Image (cartoon, rainbow, N blue to C red; front, side, top):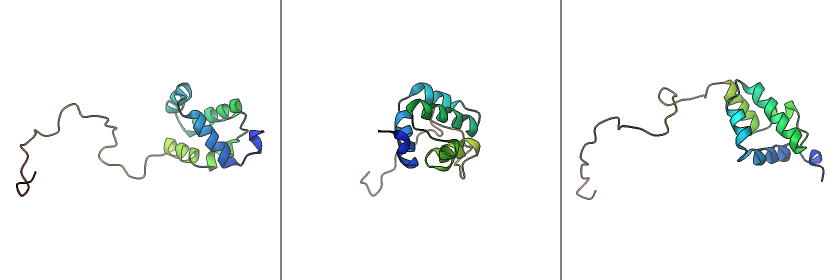
Length: 105
């Protein structure tokens, strides 16, 4: 079956599935300086898979459209100072003894 004959949304879905677990490609996407560089990498991946996606397909179809937008822009809303926090090394405040709520907890 020729993958180029599938609808664009299905070809995008196949590309996203192929990217899942592709460490080298994901690392390259994460280190891109902007959305255009991301699209170039995705165009290469599309060509290798024989999907025949165009730059326009990638920039207008979710979820890749959204990935490119977030790479080029700041999020609409952030909580705190927008620094990623994966785990806290030390507690922010010293732990206080838990107070009982109606003697239940």
